Image (cartoon, rainbow, N blue to C red; front, side):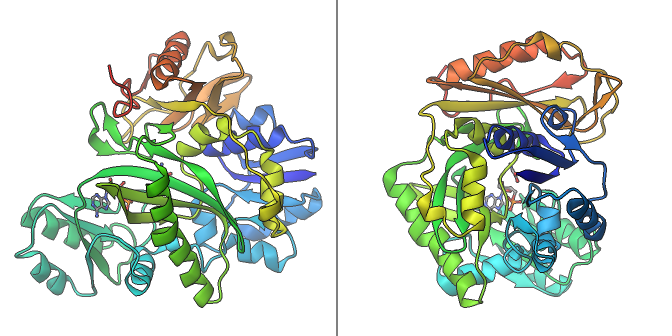
Length: 421
Ligand code: AMP
Ligand code: GLY
């Protein structure tokens, strides 16, 4: 079978590698991919925003299944487009993707279906929003409605900061803003919770904890994710049941009530407060770096799982996992998440011999004349499976030291909440 994977990050390299192990696979194409995906797939440098060109290529190569990594094409309706052209594609359609594409869409579902989430208000006018924050308790969370690459969220410590955030959003910092979301700040610990669904059946797809802040001790700017560990230390049977019964199932029921079936990965960003889950946000895809952290634990053929979804037979697939802890550290370009340089040579990658419990997934890399050059803020993902999170982290750090890339930096404290020093 020929499969196409859309995206170019660490998540897509992990998807690509997992799919490449399937007995069913004959060829993988990655649109546009990176220096890592090139090892198991053919990278095709095509504009993924142009669905028409993508479709022409897919048809010309007889690609039978498309797997979508990032949110943007999903939110823009790539699934509807390919389905209309009778091409098998894995991911939620445009309507369902509003769960990530519009925070207000999700909040309204939460309200109607009594899904636990932070208390909120939606405002269409700048003056009304400012009036609302006047006598509120701080911190207060101010959010732009649409996709903002993780940047449209402000945790505001006082009224002045909240007013500035409101102004920035209404002035179009994240695109034209018709409205704004103001939210109560939830004090707790975050957890990423994943399921996979074929529209009818739902299966759990592990938990993880991301580390979004750039610096050790969870301080500094927000990033796409500096590292993760799986499973989250917070998960237990009671909490798991609450997440499914109070959050996941009511959300899927809400979509069904709107004549929409959810197909694909669904990622709930949760705040856990005293063993009670609250929904912070939905993402309609796997997380990055959670995907890189979770997939090495998967025993079952990922392609079988995805095909099971496409055929609405997920109930017939048993998803099995290695009983190991996984920890991922992201090596970034110095300066990230602000300005950083690109095109810097990364030596020594070929000196690392990986055991079956180790992975290096590329993210912002490219291959020029057999040289690996940096090409983004998050550059490489180091993953280790082990019985102990500490050992997994130590092994990752050893691998990063072997690469010895002077232009990179990483957090040495990934998993600090679960690793007792
Ligand atoms: P989001 O893009 O909605 O995931 O928000 C980015 C980050 O802001 C989250 O990962 C949380 O760390 C934080 N955050 C968002 N909403 C809240 C909230 N209501 N209470 C506390 N922290 C929040
Ligand atoms: N790890 C955060 C995200 O994928 O959105």
